[in-house]
Amino acid sequence: MKNIHHAEAGEYHLEISILPHEPITGSVHFHIEPTILPTKQPLEKAIITVVIKQGENAFQSRAVNSPSDPTTYDANLTFATPGQWEVKIKISTEPEIEKSTSFQINVMDGGSATSNAAGVFFLFVFLVLITGSAVLYWKYGRRPALS
Image 1 (cartoon, helix red, strand yellow):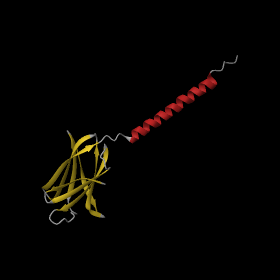
Image 2 (tube, rainbow, N blue to C red):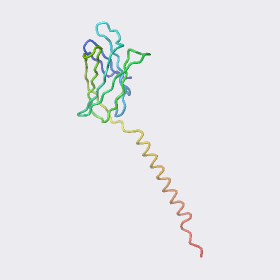
Image 3 (cartoon, rainbow, N blue to C red):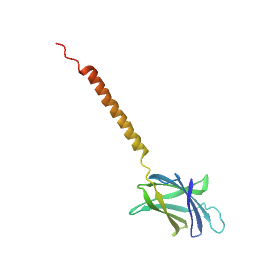
Image 4 (cartoon, rainbow, N blue to C red):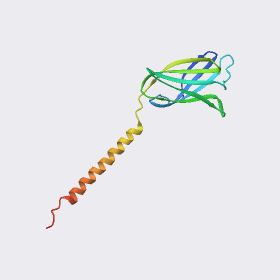
């Protein structure tokens, strides 16, 4: 995880990390560690939402903690296009009371390894079929017919 931002949201301090280290188009994992500001105690019972926005496109995901590690919250979001995105982290420990912090993140174009591999495989199969057909034609198709 790479720590990309830390901020205060009301009475909470948030440490935000991501994976992969350089955000690219596709799925990005957010890791949030909230603490209570005056005491620096980890916060185990909160509702945390991660919102990403670029122009008119906006997506959100609830960050959840687990019983094995109740002090860290994780969320996965998918960046559809490269460029500047606004990330907003909303946190609430009481109904109807919500604090938030926002920051910008630059998302690189990661391409698609799957589509690149599929394209190379298709090209290989295509070349095998064409080469095989040409060899068979030159070997068997050029003989004169027996009368």
